[in-house]
Length: 491
Image (cartoon, rainbow, N blue to C red; front, top):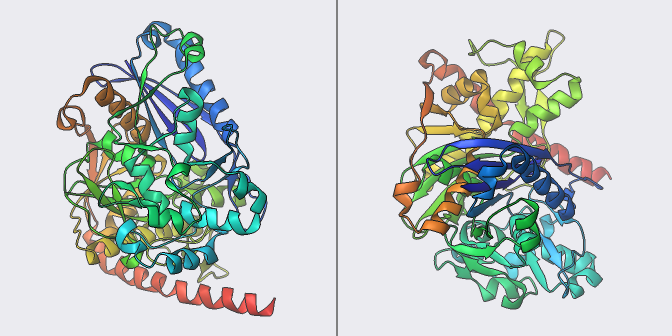
């Protein structure tokens, strides 16, 4: 038996998986995000631990016999967050999350200090990444930076709390700007550019390697026969790829979660940077990947739900299951800035082309289409970087909407496959890594592709209309930047 834990932004999900790779149970505990200032996004790491314990407590209560036989635990987690610990392992401040944009200016500082950063780390410096956050802390919270002895990503801190070991996997480490992605090791030059050293970093492991054991008190709490081994684990997207069996070069998928991802597995390190395309290590050895990221995917619909005071299901119920034409309204989903292709943490989103006749349904459809257009930005960026995608699977909470998947297929112009376990991909992938860490099996033997629940083909009759709408969408960004710039000058 294996447990996979996915530490997300909105909640912690834990799944119990048997030897036949069947998900026996899934439990989720919700999390809240604190936004004390414009552009800030933080969480208290202790809340992650409370939520994780609640989820596993529920599994142990419902399946005590099965949980007692658990031999491996895998971790998946939101990437880029900065958890700062002192010499005694105590958390010094709330974790600065992946969608926090305060460190915009620090990105230029990092790249000026380390001119080879893009070639070594495979990425443009972005405020969501970890390194610029530490430069910001060094400048604005000097006392905290001076006390910092260890910097951990969210899931690495969760492992630290549950095992006492400071260990990180290659895929998650790739999102720090401190990893030499091609060589799969920490870069001393990148760390030095942030005022840090190797001593501040956790030990590196491949995601499928053993990386610590559950503490005795937790073994007793959940009635386990022996201490399960922890796998190195993975960043959330790499864990989703493992859950989908996307471990072979050319495998591709879309993740329509809080943030959005277009992913393709590669057989070697291909430097990113152009159009803000990321190049990361995969969670399994000797494999890498490229991806484009939009910061507010399903988060855009959640925002619109809060604004309207209606549930997401109610908003979607006002629309057909497939589009007959693009919405006359446009929406830019830059609620937390944007990564691919703009690398702009300051830009903000908005609706355009509203009229007296605009309906709520048209605005809802515009939100779905705006996210789809941002995915197309990522797809075009990957193509320009040498990775052609002709079909892809789609996972994440947004994949539950037939309309949203249909819009995505037509906007991207490729077939999209809906999967049976599309909502447990990250946690399920973490459980697969746990199995690999315990058994030492070949990746190909364990990371099989899941059953497809259906395929959605692009609607050829909408191709021209969506190409036109996409071109109009592309014109929004320069205008939004101009408005933001004018506002800053005014103030």
